[in-house]
Amino acid sequence: MTPWYIASAVVAKTSLLGLGLLTLGLCIAALIGLRLFGSGLSQPLQQRIRQIFRTGLYLHLATYVMLFSKMWLIDGWQDIPTFLISHLVMHHAVSALIATILIIMTIRIYNHRSAGVL
Image 1 (spheres, rainbow, N blue to C red):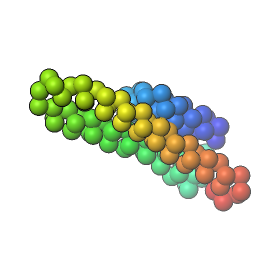
Image 2 (image 1 turned 180 degrees about the horizontal axis):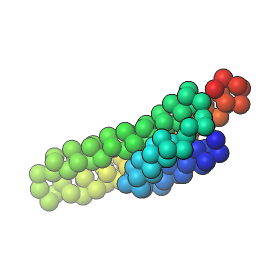
Image 3 (image 1 turned 90 degrees about the horizontal axis):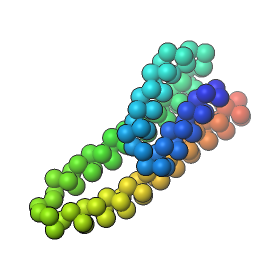
Image 4 (image 1 turned 135 degrees about the vertical axis):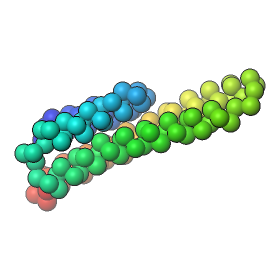
Protein backbone atom coordinates (compact mmCIF):
# COMPACT_ATOMS: atom_id res chain seq x y z
CA MET A 1 0.00 0.00 0.00
CA THR A 2 2.91 2.32 0.70
CA PRO A 3 4.00 2.61 -2.96
CA TRP A 4 0.52 3.85 -3.90
CA TYR A 5 0.58 6.48 -1.14
CA ILE A 6 4.00 7.60 -2.39
CA ALA A 7 2.78 7.69 -6.00
CA SER A 8 -0.23 9.74 -4.92
CA ALA A 9 1.99 12.16 -3.01
CA VAL A 10 4.33 12.53 -5.99
CA VAL A 11 1.39 13.24 -8.31
CA ALA A 12 0.01 15.83 -5.88
CA LYS A 13 3.43 17.45 -5.48
CA THR A 14 4.06 17.70 -9.22
CA SER A 15 0.61 19.17 -9.62
CA LEU A 16 1.30 21.68 -6.86
CA LEU A 17 4.54 22.66 -8.58
CA GLY A 18 2.62 23.27 -11.80
CA LEU A 19 4.25 20.47 -13.77
CA GLY A 20 1.11 19.47 -15.64
CA LEU A 21 2.62 17.35 -18.40
CA LEU A 22 4.77 15.46 -15.91
CA THR A 23 1.71 14.91 -13.72
CA LEU A 24 -0.22 13.56 -16.71
CA GLY A 25 2.59 11.12 -17.42
CA LEU A 26 2.81 10.05 -13.79
CA CYS A 27 -0.95 9.48 -13.60
CA ILE A 28 -0.86 7.32 -16.71
CA ALA A 29 2.16 5.38 -15.39
CA ALA A 30 0.44 4.89 -12.02
CA LEU A 31 -2.74 3.61 -13.69
CA ILE A 32 -0.70 1.15 -15.75
CA GLY A 33 1.27 0.15 -12.64
CA LEU A 34 -1.94 -0.36 -10.69
CA ARG A 35 -3.26 -2.62 -13.43
CA LEU A 36 -0.03 -4.67 -13.47
CA PHE A 37 0.95 -4.73 -9.80
CA GLY A 38 -2.25 -3.95 -7.88
CA SER A 39 -3.62 -7.48 -7.75
CA GLY A 40 -2.73 -7.83 -4.07
CA LEU A 41 -5.12 -5.04 -3.09
CA SER A 42 -8.81 -5.48 -2.44
CA GLN A 43 -11.17 -4.47 -5.24
CA PRO A 44 -12.66 -1.42 -3.42
CA LEU A 45 -9.17 -0.22 -2.55
CA GLN A 46 -8.03 -0.58 -6.17
CA GLN A 47 -11.03 1.43 -7.31
CA ARG A 48 -10.32 4.23 -4.84
CA ILE A 49 -6.64 4.42 -5.81
CA ARG A 50 -7.57 4.31 -9.50
CA GLN A 51 -10.01 7.16 -8.82
CA ILE A 52 -7.17 9.33 -7.47
CA PHE A 53 -5.06 8.96 -10.58
CA ARG A 54 -7.99 9.29 -12.96
CA THR A 55 -9.09 12.45 -11.18
CA GLY A 56 -5.61 13.91 -11.53
CA LEU A 57 -5.53 12.91 -15.19
CA TYR A 58 -8.95 14.33 -16.05
CA LEU A 59 -8.50 17.57 -14.11
CA HIS A 60 -5.17 18.27 -15.78
CA LEU A 61 -6.62 17.50 -19.19
CA ALA A 62 -9.50 19.88 -18.45
CA THR A 63 -6.99 22.55 -17.46
CA TYR A 64 -5.18 22.17 -20.77
CA VAL A 65 -8.49 22.37 -22.63
CA MET A 66 -9.20 25.64 -20.80
CA LEU A 67 -5.76 26.95 -21.72
CA PHE A 68 -6.13 26.10 -25.39
CA SER A 69 -9.64 27.54 -25.49
CA LYS A 70 -8.25 30.79 -24.05
CA MET A 71 -5.56 30.79 -26.74
CA TRP A 72 -8.23 30.69 -29.45
CA LEU A 73 -9.69 33.91 -28.04
CA ILE A 74 -6.53 35.92 -28.74
CA ASP A 75 -7.37 38.45 -31.45
CA GLY A 76 -4.11 40.34 -31.70
CA TRP A 77 -0.81 41.10 -30.07
CA GLN A 78 -2.47 43.40 -27.51
CA ASP A 79 -4.25 40.38 -25.97
CA ILE A 80 -1.02 38.46 -25.31
CA PRO A 81 -0.06 40.21 -22.00
CA THR A 82 -3.59 39.66 -20.68
CA PHE A 83 -3.42 36.02 -21.73
CA LEU A 84 -0.08 35.52 -19.96
CA ILE A 85 -1.19 37.17 -16.72
CA SER A 86 -4.51 35.34 -16.66
CA HIS A 87 -2.75 32.07 -17.42
CA LEU A 88 -0.34 32.56 -14.52
CA VAL A 89 -3.17 33.31 -12.11
CA MET A 90 -5.30 30.43 -13.40
CA HIS A 91 -2.28 28.11 -13.44
CA HIS A 92 -1.48 28.67 -9.77
CA ALA A 93 -5.08 28.49 -8.62
CA VAL A 94 -5.96 25.37 -10.60
CA SER A 95 -2.71 23.59 -9.74
CA ALA A 96 -3.28 24.19 -6.04
CA LEU A 97 -6.92 23.10 -6.32
CA ILE A 98 -6.03 19.85 -8.11
CA ALA A 99 -3.29 19.06 -5.58
CA THR A 100 -5.69 19.75 -2.70
CA ILE A 101 -8.31 17.43 -4.17
CA LEU A 102 -5.76 14.65 -4.65
CA ILE A 103 -4.39 15.04 -1.14
CA ILE A 104 -7.87 14.95 0.41
CA MET A 105 -8.74 11.83 -1.60
CA THR A 106 -5.52 10.15 -0.43
CA ILE A 107 -6.13 11.05 3.21
CA ARG A 108 -9.68 9.66 2.97
CA ILE A 109 -8.34 6.36 1.65
CA TYR A 110 -5.77 6.22 4.45
CA ASN A 111 -8.41 6.96 7.10
CA HIS A 112 -10.83 4.38 5.71
CA ARG A 113 -8.08 1.78 5.50
CA SER A 114 -6.96 2.51 9.08
CA ALA A 115 -10.56 2.21 10.28
CA GLY A 116 -10.90 -1.14 8.54
CA VAL A 117 -13.58 -0.01 6.09
CA LEU A 118 -11.52 -0.88 2.98
